[in-house]
Length: 343
Image 1 (spheres, one colour):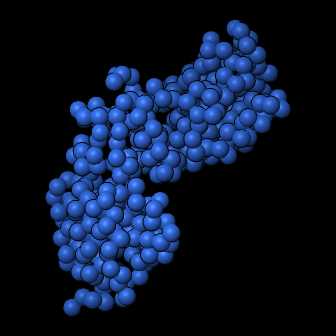
Image 2 (tube, rainbow, N blue to C red):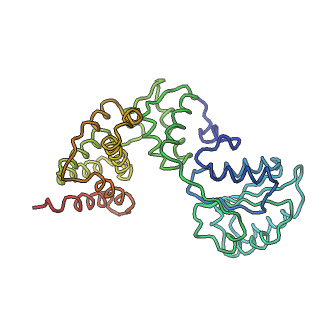
Image 3 (cartoon, one colour):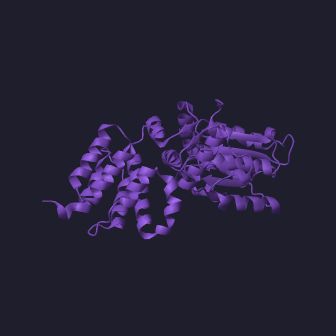
């Protein structure tokens, strides 16, 4: 297997290869066809969602040559002197094509003085200059800069998109991962193509066999095992708060990431909900789990006194809360669900 990082090796080279950002690709392709190229674009979204990849593709599609494409890391070049140098360089004509394109990554890291200098360039740009600003923190940008750009909000790719990508790239790398293992890797990616492929590379490089089981994925990534997640679900279904909290203590004692554990719990709770309320989805859901795991979820008895939707909401809320005690949000969710059962 190549030592090249997978996220670089499989970085899309054209708009057809972009996943999960159809709303952006459609607009950019339309502007290229119509010759309506703006002088400034602002790409905002969480890390690993394809901002830089789309910026590079867009530059290529409008006829910018590699010699006229400039990528600037604002985290390392954030001062006014850096932007002044950029302002002077912008004035020169392209070497080969019609446009010079400047991709400024992590643009929110610029100093206040640097933003003011950049603003002057955005207000009166040369006809041949195109700026593509990228940020993970839109709220840190001055409104004066935002107002001079076409703003595109990047979505986090869905779990399904990331899972399909994991399985596809695994095959290209000569290995096969169980669908349930692919879902675990996608879950760890947390909405980032880059993070997902970094985790996939770790799994592929750590496995000697051609077929990789979900158990092997758990072992390599250090994820909580299916058995401990199922033990937690059983405790919830039995309305046994003490048992559920002891499982959380076990998760913490074994140094598993509590947020990852809660995401696994939510994935399985959702599957139980769909199996109960949309049984026709049974066939499409089964590949996401091992046979043993799917049988457990299918046979988990319904609790007439406990609302499944209420449980889902409680742990969705717990997942959104940050605490210096990692298990505390989940413990509070359990307490709220079963406080009427307390002695």
